[in-house]
Length: 221
Image 1: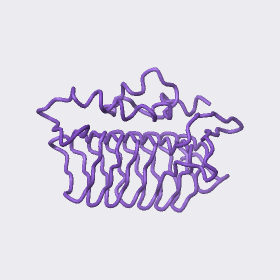
Image 2 (image 1 turned 30 degrees about the vertical axis):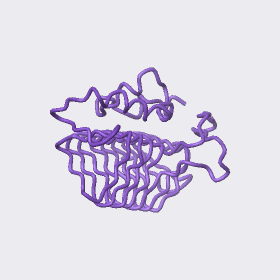
Image 3 (image 1 turned 30 degrees about the horizontal axis):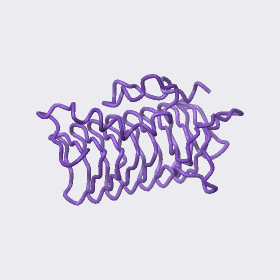
């Protein structure tokens, strides 16, 4: 079960939200605290680097935000991030340094580590994306089960109860997710794994592996 632990998925030096993870074992434990964390650290940000645009919204002056993007607080957009045409940020979102939130991409209750790319028609909700993680066009994190029961994390024969109704995907550093894939609620993907396009993923995908389809996961050479 430790495979899903924060220490095995993320380099905490690659996010301004590193303190959010302190004292936690699993990444989904931070989901209920993202909004309050933003409200706490926002006023402490260097005004020479960040500008408060409206209540609970701080945007780095070096970030590029297209006029058609919509940003609702609490939210922090870090340095040199790019928020593209018609992006929809619904709140409780931390967008890391150099990250890309693309055309018609929607974010809600997320932490994007530095250099994450969600560049084309993605939905990312109640999820954590590690350093340099990339979602191909049209890929989404599904965050609510169809029967609306609480989400559990399945790793092999073990289930970890989250106690949460909404949990999307915990995506490790440098993961590549192919186009038009669906990551089901409670998906955990280990560092440097690759997911084939058009995949439907649930449960745990081990680090440095290639997910071809359910039941067919191979190690990278």
